[in-house]
Length: 338
Ligand SMILES: Nc1ncnc2c1ncn2[C@@H]1O[C@H](COP(=O)(O)OP(=O)(O)OP(=O)(O)O)[C@@H](O)[C@H]1O
Ligand SMILES: [Mg+2]
Image: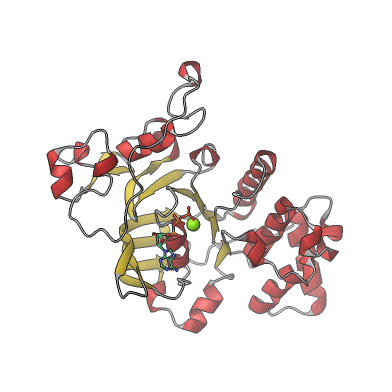
């Protein structure tokens, strides 16, 4: 089995503290589009934070910014990212290489692009270990075997010899998870890790995350556009809208008692949505009215205002401040501004 994780800095209260993060992309025309603005949150040791939002809301940008892996044109313009007490924005390329894969594991949004097509699965896991740890061949083989066994109970030896094209989507995803946890990181960032899988396999992978969190004490940032995946898994949920935090709070409060009009609308889009108790669920399918936000917009008001059913005059003029609606639950909406 994988060794029990022991955090490097046990005295700190937060594993990750993101403050006032602002990321933008420069278009070829020279125009600068903000993708994340004023993003503030923290993450405790062993905590699972779900990040929820429509396509284009900035979820992958957040994952990439945390790992300092933004694509060409992307730039962190402001803010700080404190991870295990270190500001990642000031880390050297060498430190960042150690942190990525070593302290922070990434499961990216494109599983088919993440594995090498001509190398067996076992070797691909062992390569990650070899890049970060000084192990002899025997120890490397043993540790790879243990890792694969922890994500493939019963079937790991066959999987280890298999090439990616010989594996199912769910099996490939498990190999990626083995790579992400190979060096006992304290944080795994998983960007839509189950998006390409059928519902049964999705549930199996989510169950694997629960087990790994329990066994390894892993913290996770689990990115998805599907709120249903976060129920019973995430401790807290952060809702992004147009690159800003609309709502952040304990999972049950956000899912069952959403306060931001956008979160409420998003949850109503689920086929049997979570926002009502099962006895009152009806077979309705909602869509959020209006157009998805334009990130090149440089106005002052709330970006959700044109689509919001509860908009007020002030929403057109000013950006809503974050307001606490209860302990640990914050909403950026004028409904709650004092
Ligand atoms: N490489 C890039 N160059 C320019 N703009 C980009 C780039 N990557 C993302 N963007 C823009 O940044 C915004 C956020 O994109 P991002 O990929 O973070 O969204 P997302 O929430 O992950 O969406 P999805 O659910 O579709 O994966 C979008 O408007 C997108 O067009
Ligand atoms: Mg994405």
